[in-house]
Length: 139
Image 1 (cartoon, rainbow, N blue to C red):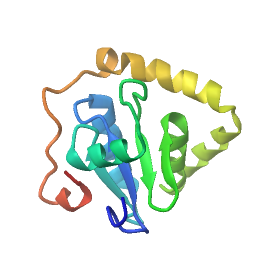
Image 2: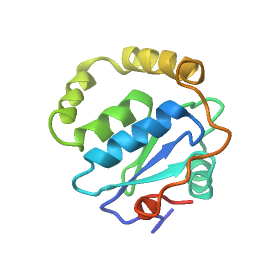
Image 3: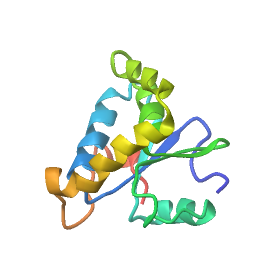
């Protein structure tokens, strides 16, 4: 896992065929003023390495995953809130929801995750980043 990404970067693993997930990635990119986030689809090779290293079963963890070098991985609502905390005002205010117990936050997260394809749709293949954004994506 060493040197997979620079220490000062955060890697977001997302469902590459989910419309909600792809919209979320675009939302993050627009607000990532510090240029700290990189992205990889859960279906990609980089994600595969991380998932294997941390023994993450994507059948059990149907979630966005935040990988921070030297800190590890975060899932579901914790990952989403940690990401939001780095996006600047007013999005970073969402971090106040960390006071809500994780099991409650994740229950809401899981409900949205369960119906995301039904509510927001699904693509046949992972999104292909534009040339301008290719440096933010890992295979």
